Each structure stands twice: as structure tokens, then as C-alpha cells.
Image (cartoon, rainbow, N blue to C red; front, side, top):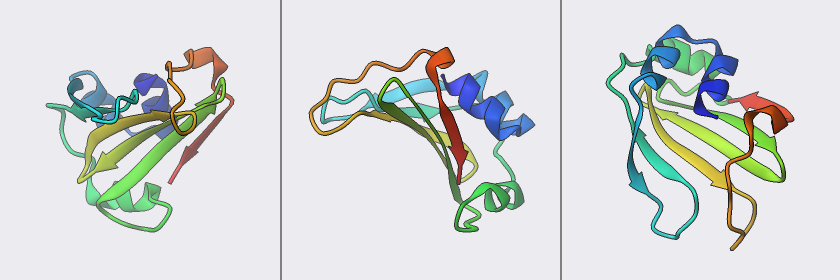
Length: 107
């Protein structure tokens, strides 16, 4: 799923980050969200600002939905930071299959 999100953004540095991404934490509430870290190079601030819905040079997100689940990849300070998955309050989430993604959004 992360690879598909990053491919949608079409940023080579972000693609490079994903090749070394690892899970470093899980959400304390028990949802399927995870904290991520990568050894890849940072996305330049100018690229982050271009992809940000608000023009911020330190944050943007790539969002997808499918199978009644929303998935958001947060990029903070030029690095993948968190993969958030949710379907509603108290609903157990299983990551949707990449082929079921019906919409992608960057902002």
C-alpha cells in the first residue's frame, strides 16, 4: 500500500525512502496506524510545499480510500512519518488490497 501511495506522488526521493522504510511504533489506541522511519534522503522543502494542500514546506499527505477504509501517509520534514488507517470509531481496520483503492489524493 505504501508503495502505491508513493508512486502516485511521483517523487523519486520519496520512492527511495520507501525502499528502507520500517515500522517504529504502533498507535496506542489499538488502531492499525503505525509510525515509520526511513534511511532514504529527505524530500526537498520546495517539493513538499508544491505537494502540500496548504503550501507548507514541512508537511503533506497522500490519501487513498477503498473497501470502506481510508489510508493516509503523512510526510513530515521531508520524511515518511506515519501510515494511518481508519474506517470509523472503534472499527477494526485491515489494510485494503492495493487493487481496491478507488481514489488517491495528495495535499
